[in-house]
Length: 273
Ligand code: 8IG
Image (cartoon, rainbow, N blue to C red):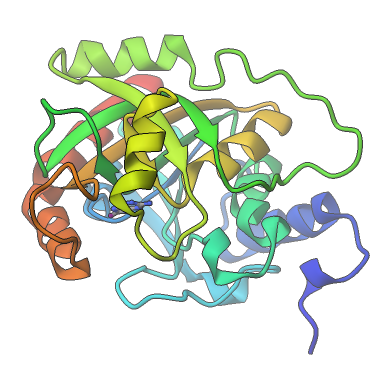
């Protein structure tokens, strides 16, 4: 069967259908906030509040099967102690999977269609700043989209000033005053950068290298959401560290930091929700 987002159908209609699926399967008609959990952030789901329902992403219209093992393919509805409803997205489609930006943007558009007005995007990424260590969480202050692609279609001119909300970053820093921030450069991947590409990213003003968040943030802004972005620096970017990058290093750094950063994320969401 062909995928609904590969049809000429309007991707926002597909997102509307997905939101209807979520309402039916979770019994929660409206969500206030959505959060996408990237590498290293998974433990936050249990700390945000009480899980009302967990559904496999494959039962929701338009969601693709996870490409990587260790990427949880579930959506959860979580109720915070204050009574807000948080949609926890553990099913990210990456641009490098090659299915196009509609599929990349679908979870964000679905979150907006459930009613969420804040989109929290988290990821594991490489760090360029000399002062950063693997296992350190940082705020995303802005991005540089190096994919050469966009989730916007047609002559859709959308302002990207203050894309990563200064208001939400301020709240995050109230929870953890030691949080540093940086500019996220999205590369297409799936290969990690060469040291020369990391030097280019540094020269043009980048501090973080990753493969997911910029395209999602653009879609969130188009949908009218406020965006908060966190990167877990799981590794120093190629050439910044004296040793080669390994996927295992990335997984280990995520595991090691997971408890601490997930608590941070849950606290921040508690302050917003
Ligand atoms: I985890 O060093 C993780 N994701 N592009 N570069 C890019 N993506 C990443 C990296 C990295 N580490």
